[in-house]
Length: 185
Image (cartoon, rainbow, N blue to C red; front, side, top):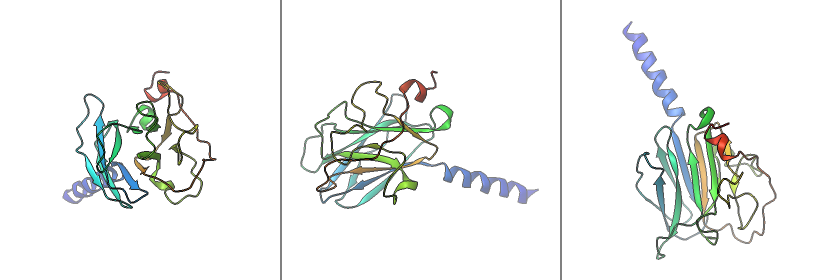
């Protein structure tokens, strides 16, 4: 009986680890940045993290967390720019995410793209939001814009900084309107 209890606890812990929410911020250039994370009202506060040039940092989030993140380059004023918005365990237990240009569409040094961690090595991503070069058609520009993307994964990659000499992006993602994200069909 005791063995069964231990086995059940281990299985539960393993399932919890598999479903842990995270965003890994990947810095594409040499600029040091601070990642500021802003929760939606009622969700847990997450402290800012430092992101060195050409490094990455993984930030974990509680179950069901909703909010956004943005970066500020070293030496610059703390002004929100492109936002990495996320809703973990949203409607139908999916993760909803997008790169939003609503607050500051002129931020070309901060958040660039978001995609599931399983696609980190893929040359062409099937589920993503944002741009390698702004402006583009795969970012969120207007309130209730149909640019939100979903995945059943809970680990996301968020690229920040500059890709280099790229001019535009060619892939096209699938989008969901805001009412679907919130389960208001």
